[in-house]
Amino acid sequence: MDKIKFTTEELDKYMDTCISLAKCSPFPMGRPYVGAMILNEEGNILSNGYKTFLSGTNMILHAERNAIYNSNISPMSKHSRRSHILITTLEPCSQTRRTQQFCSCSELILQYPISTVVIGDFDDVSFSNGKPSSFLSSRGITVIPHLNLRERIKDELINPLYGYDSGKVYTPAKTLYKMSRDN
Ligand SMILES: [Zn+2]
Image (cartoon, rainbow, N blue to C red):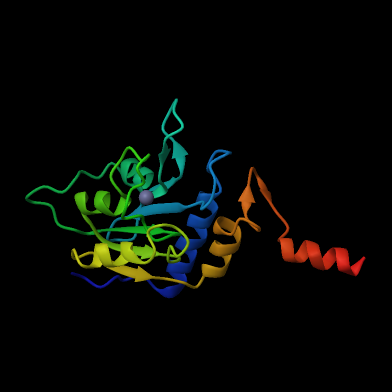
């Protein structure tokens, strides 16, 4: 499998865009906010995705699933070659909750001609806890942690005390505490 040909700067830029995408989720979606995009091997952006509700329901479509569906790439067939790249702010899920109606994003990734998954952060808060990357890599998908923007992802998209919600970026609780002490 080809090694990814993007520079660090390019990956920073893609990840920055994914962070912005994550904030397009409708309120009240709930954290973690996630943004994702699909690129072809030439580095052209084919699609993007963020968490949404399945139309008319309260079921959540994950960012990776939306990015894959929006890209219009066909599922793997006998003749397809894995060549596409998925960039996502957070490690894709590999397990499904009982309430989830769909397969996990990692399983979905296997069904499409995606060779490489670039993740902005590990999912160390949820039930998936470190397993998704190994789930994918053990099945031949290259998983590249690109953690340069990790602190922003944690602060803006994951941390419940300091995250984007409903169009606002909240002041972190620690800062509020400090402000009240200062006054
Ligand atoms: Zn998922």
